[in-house]
Image (cartoon, rainbow, N blue to C red; front, side, top):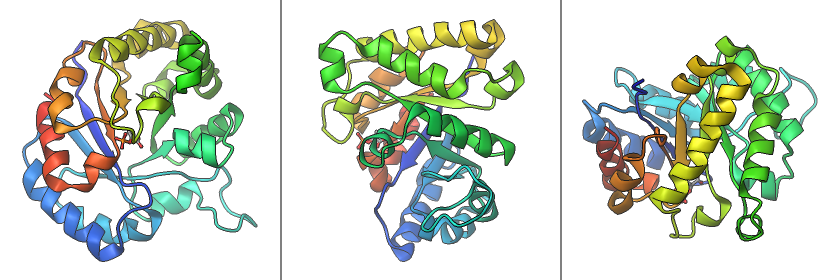
Length: 251
Ligand code: PEP
């Protein structure tokens, strides 16, 4: 089964509107004709402007987070409908920075996932263990709990609309990427779990991105692994040359 590679840039809390538009204009040129699916996730404030700047290109627009309610008294939050209204194709959910700095639990990620799916958004659900958990031999316990917590109970057709991102927390923003063998090991375990949750066709179809210090010089090796179907890229997605080099490595 061939899964089209999917590379998404998570810009986190970087870029003014003008800077975001400039970056995505460069990316339009540099990623034109890429075989991989390409998406960028700017901050909320730049979504509409970036949507206009990607019009007519294959670059998709993702938000970095959303609330689970449609509307209401939730100061500072943005609903899935608002994300959709701003032009987004999808949304990143359960990023480790959301889990660690903003207290997001598996239960909350599951609620957000269902709300995003109900709005027709393409969710990228992030999972991954901390260094302490890895060193304690608890990697699979943690990752499987996160995957089950978010995806458990969804039917096969719904599961196929989701992308997962395996992002070991110790590799995010540290310059220390997982080795391709470490990534492949966990990705293969996740695919086995997806088979349990939704059957073989679901396991074959869902893309599992790797995230954690992906750079132009390690992307080809990581992306060559059989169960690594793309990348979720933080720091290197802020430079058009680096991000487009990673996109080119995703064949
Ligand atoms: C991320 O934040 O999803 C990420 C992978 O960051 P970085 O590439 O900077 O490690």
